[in-house]
Length: 631
Image 1 (cartoon, rainbow, N blue to C red):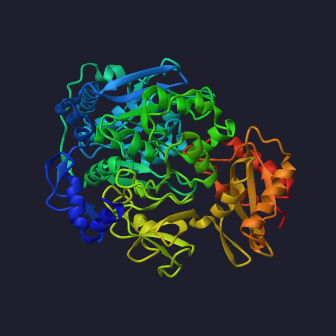
Image 2 (image 1 turned 135 degrees about the vertical axis):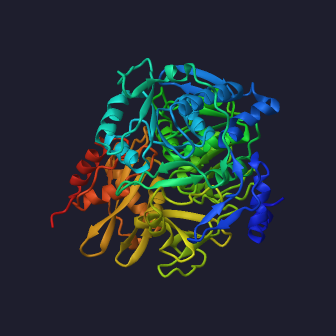
Image 3 (image 1 turned 90 degrees about the vertical axis):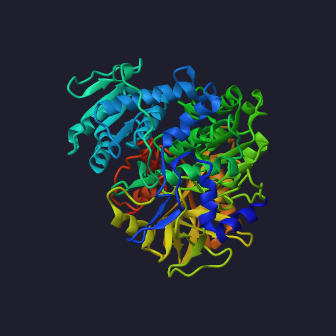
């Protein structure tokens, strides 16, 4: 069956399409319909069905005779530890943890914050919550105390599951002091904390509040799976925005199960029993969808990787993991591949490993520049799919559906919209634009199952943030265009489209040109204020390890490249070389923060920044070209 016919089937009868997909899920009470429109105009999926996430992700595989299949592979190049957990072992561990939570009064609908590093117990905690209907909210391990406190006050958890520390290449990060301070400054007070002690840095426990993880589960009675309505929230995940209060994305249970299960074969083209690896963190949406839930729901083996693409120990670590564990499908962020490419521009480290098991590489989390995609395709000799989605959607809006039909690859495009997503390019007035016209990317309502249903305790904010801009559409916040064949091109966040003397230019298009230079490993372009032109672009360049040209030569060459490829209209005349770009921990470049520094505007230190010192480097680089300018 062609992808066009599958998409047409969804378009012609969305109800039947998703009801058919729901048959792949074990329901305690099957839904009678897929979509329900609520009185307030919002939507629910499979709301009259009853189902349990943990049963579908763990227990049913054991019941089907696959209990001895490995469910989780733990690989920590930082500590040198490796282990495996079978589905049967995972069921027993999760059931006891869930029972321990029940014994302390956690019930369906209660919230539990999970503040943990990349270890198997983080997944066990997520699954234990869903087993008893508790709503988990994972907060990136090591997140600042103030940001953790904000999330405590918003979702009001009864309990926090944590570990004594995380381990980074730079050293041990003690979580307990951060957790204690967050609880101290939060207005809402949690009832208890469960702490997993790690040998690298055990924590002192407060006897009146803290419980050792091993003591907590030792004598617990295993809990059974509790069915919940399809509309019941599986989790709350706070977006990693750099300004303003975080938004708690609510993921309903039924649609989450149906949609993620559908993606594993149709998009990623894997079979149950194969190894699927998403090199992300459980604190981000990729970690929720494709480290924990989707692989386990579908019956794959998933990898929990405690390491970095470079430095643990070198730029070969990804390829070692793929070869060691026979990974069929690999999913990571473009920034990770750029980091590897920067250290090993010729891909010589790849030749040390037998990667014949690998069938595809998927990229998401930010726009993948063509140079990075072409490098990966050339070195790995497998399809490289740049697919596009958001925390809010939970899975791909646009992709190349390898399990249905491998579509022609258009470098620079994440592919075509997937079933459930009617994507349109709109102008400021909400009118649909034609092919190759840059505009706001919006999705016609209703959003498909598995996407957010609202924001936690903030329905009005959900409406104003996503639904008010264009009547009948969800506003993605991204700008882009489609070509004549329906391929989508994501050019920038809407606020990253800059206006140069009346010409709207995409920073993504400019970055694509800069990245094509052979010496450039990674780059960013931001628009800064200019009295004459309104805004002008400035480029920030990170160079490959083997770059042999002078910085001045490279800068002049990329300026000429922009002039040749885009034209003088871009007014691109300034670039600087930096060693690193400021990013969030999920790999997104903090372009708006860079622009505010250049424009001499106040800015809030982004809570999600990976390395605050990278902003100091940006400041110094800007000073060399006269920024910030005096007013």
